[in-house]
Image (cartoon, rainbow, N blue to C red):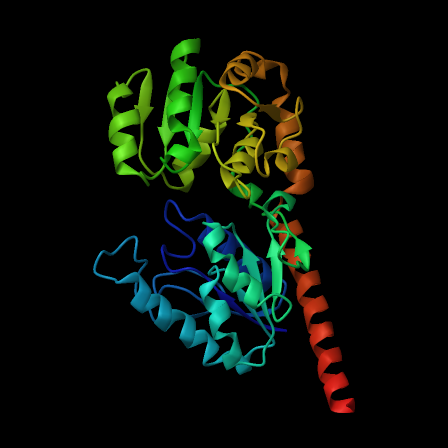
Length: 347
């Protein structure tokens, strides 16, 4: 089975710091390669992989301001689709744009939809519905306008996350600094409870950061560390009392939620999007509807067994499970493709 894996080019694959889509692509690529599949990764030239790497873009455009995103996105996507017939299957992780290139090849294409940035992108997905295949990353993120071949939750590499049985003494926000992520709510909760809050993540909305976050930073009770790499991420997640996740949008998945639980750290999250699929209320965290409920839940996180947080990840969110789920989807697509070809020949 020859698989072409199309990664985004905002960041390196795998990312040095932030880059959730690139992180998933890397884990899947390495997992497939380890199982003996012939995988070619289309990603930035500085990407790291055990599989074959093909690249036209030297670096991620979020890491090099000299790289004009649309130009290199077109070159990157066309590089794959111009060679599409060299592969048995193309796996697109690049959102909707590559769908418009699918007429260049007879190779079947499956797209993992990592989320809908806006309802305005749905026309592209609708046009190629049933002409290609879609995988959802959660039941909550499915559009009723589309057909899906599967729902596959993300998996993580547990060897990168150290289980820590003892609860920490600070609250943690881990993610992009943006209003929809609720960074300001974490600050409010920490101040009202009287606990230290550590913030980590890229600033995605500078005006919001300047107005709602920066004024509260004191490097003692409210601390911002910026975007952190894998080692620091493991330390921060594992040494927290709880991860706060007061999202103000229907989040498609939430890798940091699973990563925190892998370290034994429970998560207190708003009951939105995929959170009810990831968090078992009263087992590995709490699902809440208001800030008041979140404050009350934080006072009860010590009642949760940190080992249960880890076990739920081992049971449901490993990279091995994710890889096996995708292999089953690949096989189903190839069987469908062969049947269609046979039917066409017979007709």
